[in-house]
Length: 309
Ligand code: NAP
Image (cartoon, rainbow, N blue to C red; front, top):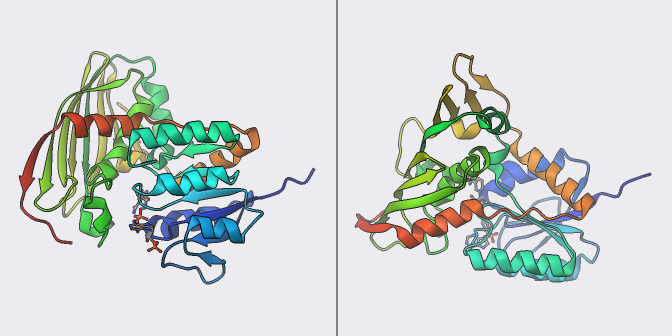
């Protein structure tokens, strides 16, 4: 039996839409990109509209939307899509607040559509094998270091340092998405600090002390790292140290050679979305966002010198 393709509208045509979503969609014949919605950006070969409502009104046979806008403002876009009976895939972080994602989950359930909160770093090649290896180990300590250069990876993205932009937690939430997947026990926050540059709302650096079972979990986040970039998770266990490097793409197990595989994060996310749509099942995991919200509640805040891109 011929399976009809998912007719998808892509929303927010910026860096991640162009770098990852467009190539992943082009390579997956379960999807057909039929429209975009973005205030300014347009693609040459796909009909483009200024916002989600306009796109929904103009393209009556849409099946789904994938939102690649900044998190603040996504709630309204997702709600409009759900109300129109469309399945919704959300970039990370799914929404600007916890209440918004819980409300969307309920709305999607009531409407009978699929809601998928994606966490692309969980699809990095080393993450599933790391989780499997850790399953029968005693975990003694975890160190997470996520240090990158905001000017290199987020050039001119003023929204990222505004309220609802998450600051250094925009990349940092990727580390938390991996940690919540590979560690068997919940991650609980004990204390945190944040450095917020003068005149901005979101931090450029942060630290967290957490625990997971009996293990202490230390997190260091930095948005001003020039030179080598660091996206590492180290886990001390009774069988030696596991290390996930380069955002989860390189796995080093004790006594073994480094395992590295090509990046398939976004193809895997769209494959999963297609499966969820076929099964009529949502996948809404808020744990990484919950930890960030806890950090924003608990952190000691310091104002640091002003920052310009
Ligand atoms: P971006 O380059 O700024 O693109 C976002 C696009 O959304 C903009 O180009 C803009 O296009 C549209 N938009 C709609 N409302 C907006 C608003 N209020 N402020 C700014 N732009 C608005 O950002 P991005 O890097 O693609 O990030 C988007 C989302 O993807 C974020 O949640 C981020 O965490 C996630 N993500 C980013 C990366 C990365 O490496 N950059 C990686 C993975 C995930 P119009 O002007 O045409 O509306």
